[in-house]
Image (cartoon, rainbow, N blue to C red; front, top):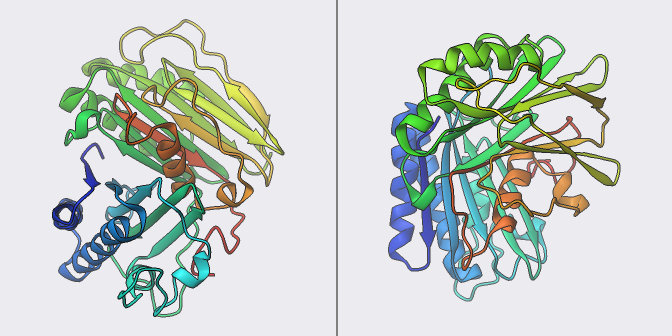
Length: 353
């Protein structure tokens, strides 16, 4: 969904703003009061930690649609900083531990208990990324949230309320498809185009990338149009197929190397090429796919830290977005990053394990 909330946290007044952002997101998602309270608690704790431990940072709240529409929308809360980092992530998530004088040390532990999924990635000297997902229903006591193969983050130009980018994923049998759309321009009309692309993916998740793009061209003629990248994994054949039209980027990591996957020039819904090349590559247990809009700087560096690459896809996406900019050099466009990964959960990937 195109509505986004972005709160730079550099003084105590912004902690309240982060809490309000979480509440507004829950209201739009239709979450019950109890889940809204959980989201507000998570946002408050993460924003407070930005001030106490990182000297400030950025809170981002997104709405996350389910892959097939069979359940209600979730709320994803992100915390990003370039602070000193956390030396012992495991200890930091236990109640009673804190590096701040006078703190009760309950913040991250309460986030872990309140969210359906809570992931924390931190490197001393480089900063921290936290991602918490609040679903419509709380987990059963002691149960682990099912792993999600895809994750992403979106932010809007100049902290606008609507982002012209959108991403989504869908499953059809052994096919897993990830789509990222960048609506032409900015604002509500760009958001309408990208949201329409994601909605169409969920209505036809069985189509291969090339056919889906052609179908999208017809659907998006009623909109401004969009750049669209589509990646589909055939789990039975262990193969990735990729196709894109417009200025949407993609990179695939296999083993220790990254490969750029190039989209064809054009605009889905306005100017569609006569032939859209489809690239096919092996999909392995160590593979990782990144789709991104052109809001990400052209010379962004893909991550190499094996601890990050083993994390939940939402954390990988958020870390890529954070590291592509800085407080002095923020992104200058609507920006989205979406990540697809095999299920290879480790203690780094799921903080509840």
